[in-house]
Length: 442
Image (cartoon, rainbow, N blue to C red; front, side, top):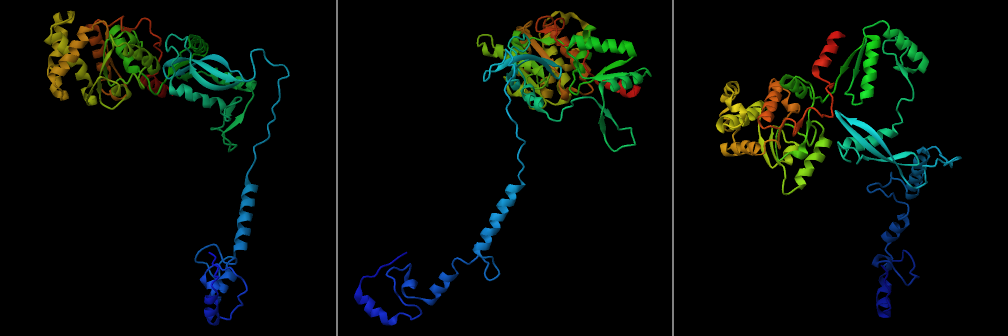
């Protein structure tokens, strides 16, 4: 703030009242205290550039110059502590491959498995480095679809901690504190062969899709007397056991969701985690886009799932009510309506008699339950009933799968929407019994 006073009368009037601390020689002032030549003003002015920038610091505080020095030293030390990445020089090709054009991506096909589901992949690369993983549109099972886990697998291709050679486990070695040591391939072969000849060999693996790999494992087992055990954390042994009990063959059927008009799912989250969700999503979406022949989905859900979120009707149930839902629908068709050839079989009718009051047990309207059963019958041969998932792994797991097989047979879905002959997944899938047998043998 500056103030200029040109009124000479005011100057003459106040000249006798100004303090004599300093002579007033300038014509511009920052404030009235400066104009009046106040001693407190000059004291503050002298200390202005020597005070600490931190409030509350007076006599013991740092001077501004010292504070700036300290900040400069801190920045210098922080900069010195940064470590630069090693310099990598770009080296041009001595002999550039014909299939590589700089700046233009190349595509390679590959195969991988997501649990029990085989997926064909199309990998986008540039100068040999993978950039994107997508589904292969020429693969008839997924038709270009892929799962989020397969797309995320791109990150594992850059794993710097991956094994570059064989290592020996030193867990039983007491001479060193190291966990592993590097070993040459020849040494590894000699040591493993010596152990294999002693007998008592078991091969533990996940589900193997490749027929050639399964053949190699079989030949290995025959050569060394090894038993092959298969284990998957999210396996479908209940479906396999139910198929074997119903039809004598342990297979996971291929469910044709693209040929259905009516679907009933009992806790089987086939759009999320159950079965082959990538394949099922692609097939299910085809019929949902066909407005004239759109598939109707009814979900009996004990836990909110992705399939339940996309269903037309979702009924909340308890896990203990899963078996009652399936046999209650069979009761509506066979006994109440007297439909299908099973209506003349006394053994089936005796089994279904005690499931007459399922709607009241579920807490839903009898008309709604009866309409679901009628829709299944009206679209027999184009309907589908599925059940499975972690919530179905209880004491009724096998009975539930047998009941589902019975209801699909009543509806005439065998060989149409439920295909056990041309299934894409073999019978050699992991089960709890396999793991328990291995533990007992060990």
